[in-house]
Image 1 (cartoon, rainbow, N blue to C red):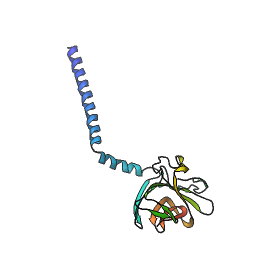
Image 2: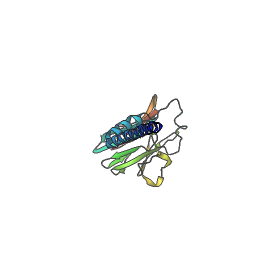
Image 3: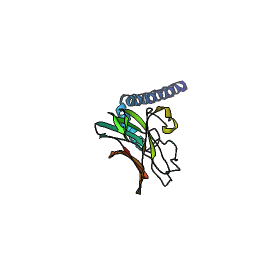
Image 4: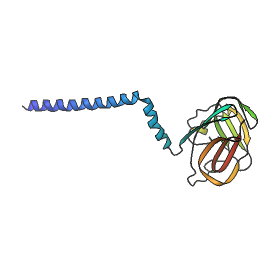
Length: 193
């Protein structure tokens, strides 16, 4: 009798174990089969990061322009000369490198730039013009920490404007005169034709 009870208990535990493993297996196969649903679920997660990932697309002349960047916020911090040091390469955003994708050849601040995808870096200065860099290594997971000057395709100068209104979250827009970076009291127009 004791053997029958032990046998029944063993069978019941085995059945529970098999059904729970089967449940996990079916849930894994469901998520593997629906990669689109997984991508949609990942999107809100990406938007919850401290510096949300932003993407935009527009046209400049004959070129379709796509930009992707991480958008940090001021959060009461001193940005220029502190969080973003002067005279050092900055990824012009947060997290991974900001990139610009150009479908056609353009001129940037009067200099030619071939169609392609480039990371966008800047070198902020305490006064005067800033250096704007288009670099061939666009898929940099850690932005300026992986930046290599030898991969620069184009370096130009752009004059920053300092405005009275403060922009809490960094934005990059496709507007006249080409691309405009705004953050805190900075407005950095980058002329593209």
